Length: 372
Ligand code: FNR
Image 1 (cartoon, rainbow, N blue to C red):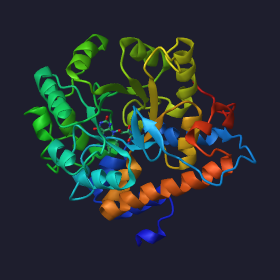
Image 2: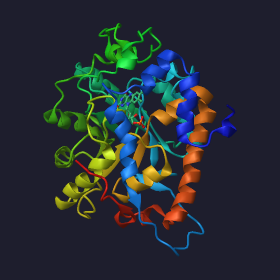
Image 3: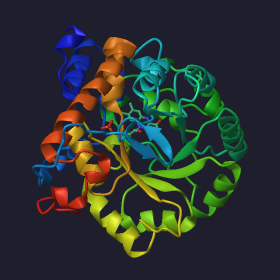
Image 4: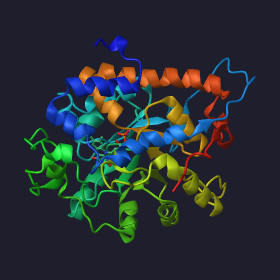
């Protein structure tokens, strides 16, 4: 259908299912095992309800915010998803350009189809980019990647910690990897297993021995870039991350692609916030701000507003970005972001929150959340 007929982020998924190549659809849409976590990621948002306020003068609403100290037009960033060219021949640079147009931040994936430099070169002057990092068993490669990222102006490194091994994504395993990815192969050297679907084929270089004692070395190498752990799944690990001195965590289960029955990030957010607050890591003037992000199943501005109300700085959006890219290219991604902006505008009015600072815990009711 023409882009004008797309009304929500869900629509992009429905269209992508019909228009994408089988291999691309299978790789993007798959989750681990029975895909229970993948579905629960979004479903858990259905158990959080608003407590809207009235008569708050919502003549103008401002949904802009600051993410790790960088301005963003809304509390949303494009998270890292591998293999953009499985969806669109131009790949991830379409995301870079749409992010620029809407003043939001793109997280560059280690395993992009475009080269790292292509994605940085596609950015406009001043555009903020973060980078997602898979730590290689060959640490000298990782050191080189970090150094290059810092030199090219990347502002933050999101170290993926939920994937010591790639999850079992059966839909994807049914399609053989036929080499759609080329640039990212330089990340892994010769270590590829080519017969188990796209995910397995590109990920065999990831170091499963990565542990807490490695963090210092990565932080030392970061040359001023912020360090965030992506893939934290319980409050204990969020506390350990804060104690280790990183700048934040992403509560994420990799879009339900890793451990099936890992909890939805929105369900664990309240316990993470209260554990960090109790230990003085949140809202502490004596410490740099520790930021919490969530990703997984975010499809509406109302989902984002719930996460922000519960203490998240911003949320990452994955599949809707690459589904919209796959069918409509940069225009599609741009439309998806515009839909979110329009939803923010309206829903903040209806919620009685003129700015992001007004989106506070008392605006949500989590009594039905059944948090683990
Ligand atoms: C991902 N994700 C991911 N994460 C990461 O750290 N490195 C990666 O290479 C990838 N690759 C990737 C590919 C595809 C096709 C998907 C769908 C996801 C996970 C991603 O960053 C994020 O956690 C989820 O996508 C968020 O869930 P939604 O928004 O897709 O529901």
